[in-house]
Length: 330
Image (tube, rainbow, N blue to C red):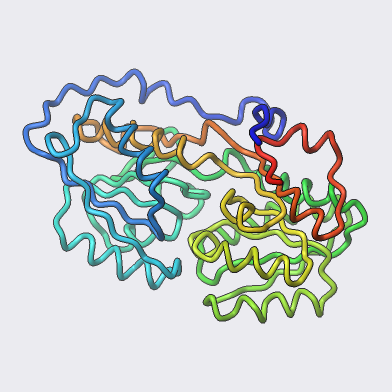
């Protein structure tokens, strides 16, 4: 059931309001349909629909003002993304929309001069996609995945709130994902303060997931934080199955993994992000340059808790935490 917005998860001032982008006038007429190439690990109908809705809300009509060419890299790995990006660019689009850090990095590696709008990228400055959030420079801009460096510690703190005596927490992450360094550094900043030992385990493919959970069990992990990325998004259902099978409470970033059986997630609302990204895409279609459009941060975050999973794991969720949730799955 839906709850009130998760107020207090992120401290004031973290959301970035790019006034320059809003003030910029883009009046270049659209003379032919703009070919938008979209790269993503998977395509969900609700997110796809929200993106089209965002373009329509900006006054653009599918077929008249733009056409879409979508390519998915189903494995979620950098190798999968590199291959899909190369194939997509051969279709000669007018611009690229890249979902996820792995996808955006793949487009960057392809060295295209086309305008690129990325969505759901962890730390675009740190990994070299843009010069800064306020002044991207180059041919890329978009929407980040996190609102601030404190988001990963919040995911760990939420797990700690449910399991106050936890001392050993597994960290599941995908090989080659540019998000990992930032995630581990951010998590360590809180882990030391709350007396938690992190147990990071890398996986290279979906075939490694079962053995990764075996390692967590052997190391005595009492909880799990899943590093957000294309791989863990694509394999969210399998991760949720292993969470239940190994009785390992999890905290992640994706609502769908919680719907599939994970314990909790804190992350951006993807439909809202799709509409937000569509507004940036519309500005590019109308003549704006990515270099001049500040990178935006998500405007809506959701805390989702699976109460059914909590009961299956023998956990009690405090009423105060349930009251803070945007959605409680029962």
